[in-house]
Image (cartoon, rainbow over all chains, first blue to last red; front, side, top):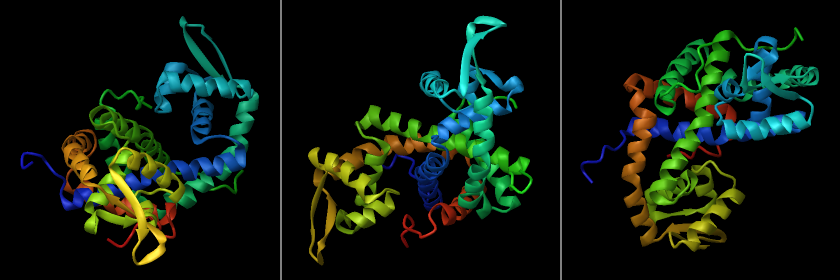
Length: 159
Length: 159
């Protein structure tokens, strides 16, 4: 197998740590949000992305990009959020073939009520370990990784 | 909510990119391994960790640490790998209350056959985006994050 391009010791060490973070982070985020707000992290992140958008509304395709999800996965989750009164869907006025998702007033209150303890968890369990230089390096490295994981830039809208 | 500690713009930007990587990486790794080897990434990683161990054997508790999994989750996966002939379990000779998992000869051949295309995918979809400095920075940053995600060091054995 001498034609294979194996990993250097440094690459392997960093890769194993990245896998550990990728494996552990979702459970930590989900556990806090389930306990405190009865939401998965994906559900919370969907509500949060809508809360930041103009008029708290996004096309479903744009919302899928911002939540790193396929349209199919997002549609299932938005159905659940709609049933709980946090989101509504309607045809886009500018393009009737497209569907908009909007945060309801109740959805907005849910985000406002949930954000503080969630942000506290993100800080305590992840970001407080990093100083300013680490944060800048993390931003640069993750941006580079995303050029390979997401070569078409589907999940990195311009903003 | 002025007592809350919100994220800086730099933290928020880096955090969203990390979430994108955490969201996208498992699907990319699973898709390649399912297609080429009929294994999930977790199944492959379990076999790979056994393949690196002395006598290709680890206590189940140590294997859980190295695969970033609870013992319960690992036990389910090892049962599937046992049914496919890749792994066997037996009481630990040194402590009969503990269980060892061992890679079979067939499991070893499976790792050897699967590793090249998987390593190629890891490089092409993630690591080739990073130069030596990036890899060193990634290692440092992920180690720091793991001090918070995994404060007891359960998932970072000494080696």
